[in-house]
Image: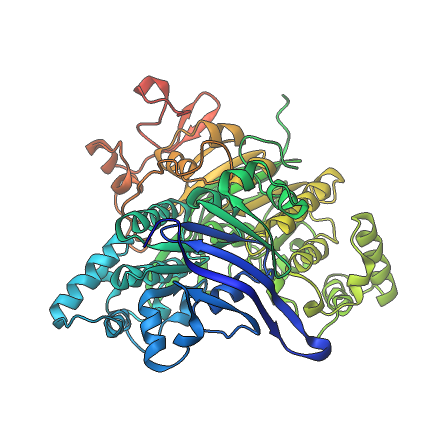
Length: 265
Length: 335
């Protein structure tokens, strides 16, 4: 793919929950392009619709209106059965609540082994385990410690890191990372962020990074989309958004972030 | 600057968890003084014992947490060995108010805020009538410019930020001397965070509370709210100092590591080299001899692994390290 061509794009993307009086427009006619090998952050407060966009991009939730294109094809074509599995080989997600992502009745080893069902090449159990170990080490988790444990025995941060290890196994084209480091401590978080950036370079991965943390968004991304009440109110270069925001909402969001070198209260 | 008088003093506090016959040393010999009018920030990573410390400071040791030694002195009374009933009656809420982590999620969903407050206050001051209580609450809400409408709402009608503010106001209704706030802002977005911090500052300015212990893992926040910061690692405090000392010129290698992992939207932060940290904090079941940070420390020597490291005084600062990052060691602490 060419660096400047859109890998994922949304046109008039809308999602409505409920109806009548209880109708909530979670995502309201949103348009965007995410380009090949780009890291884009989607920022906004809780309830702004960030996660809903992520879930629609992953084909986990149908849009009420509008469409999403993956390399020019409407992702509706990948909505069911084998086609959807094909889609998930290429577009993967990491969620903010990793507990719900694992099968709780399976050990970590078994959970990760299931990942290989998405892969084409056949591998022996030893090969698979070796790969699993390698990817766990990449995210700073001791394989011997966690392989035989169950998800509930691990901390939130460990579970999030194991979710990321899955991504190293699958190596998708696009990663939708929804608050992937929210439970990871600061000293380990930096390592994870750098790994994501490395994935982009080494594996030519495109990443949509969903976060409420402006600092993280600025740190990792090329461009930032700012969401407010279901709409993208401003988008632009990370530098531009952080230092020269133009929309009043972006201005407020930036000024509410505590920083080190400026008075805040 | 005149050193303010102490409102609380903690000496060598030990609070351990007893789980399946094994002992987890979550708070292992913590000493600190809390001065009148200050916000003391306690920072560290998950599992370092911050929350356990907060709970212990309230004197309430709920199983499996057990008190193993040390003192918690509030002016004239020692609360660490106090009977739980007496503690609840005379100390909690009145002298010390403890807001546990995610307290806002513990609001009873079937009670309006007003009924919840009545429940709480009646427990402490049974002679008050409902009208008196509500008057008091309305007055306090008003004075802190919170909408009185909130009092007649159910928790689900309030946003997370509002719930957290309500909890903070209710827990300080009896004007406690000390407010212990454990991660009061961690589940909130930045704008609500800002409001909570302002609320806590106002409580201090109006002397509704005299001192605050603010526990968090978010260091940029402490930069703005704390007067002094204590850094915790593996059950112990490893460095104490003023906020600017800790954030801009840390002495302990661990503090430095924490500070350099701060990411904020500021010039120079984008894509900057961050420290690559290997290893994880030690197992608090079996504590090894010597410095607890030794395994991950870039400046470790054999000497570090022999005896427990005591606090060293460097000027007005204190650090639990044999090789603090001072100019003397050829390491620029501010870098």
